[in-house]
Image (cartoon, rainbow, N blue to C red):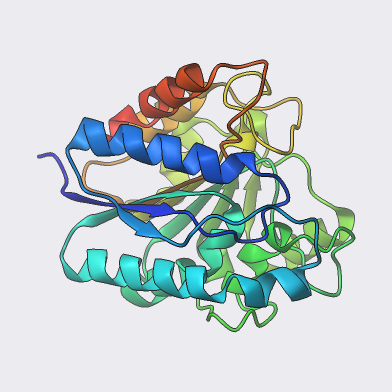
Length: 270
């Protein structure tokens, strides 16, 4: 049975340091809207990117984060599966606390080259997107809630993790799978029959497929991500977040990237 989705598209700046991710979210949202014949819920209004510190970016994102939380709550209450297309991973500050509340038994698959597990005390860059998962797990207070059990988090494809961040991940009990360990069999084993919430940052891929602002070599290939999705138990997916498609990359035409996004997640769409 094909699941009923609610399509949610983030269009408000949430710590964006480039302009391409908001455009990318809009383009992918439009493609999903056509493919699934859904009217999207648009949250936020685009504003220019700024290279700023998390302490400035976080309060400026309040309205967008609150809107995303409300949209996810409404989707779950309507008994639909939230399908979120967001600009940055930091948008998940508004969604993950609701996941913890409404789906406390779900495993969080954080499919990302990065752990995003820094705190205000460990971050070198000051980038809010590198701190989102730690906030959702309660390591620091973002003001938007927490509640995710780190022992129910699996970082898939992680390979660019700061030393202090790695220590926090290990101490919290987060499972981190390097690309070579990120197989369908291993992911299914870790799920152990539990439901799953999926977050994808496209920088998990080897550069050159779906552009992202932060390029990290040694990544997974699109068909490997698709194989993980194909191996998930039927009916297990409680929500999907897709983030960080950087539109405007001269090396990869936007239409190719959008088509590849749709192809990679096709198994999640029924």
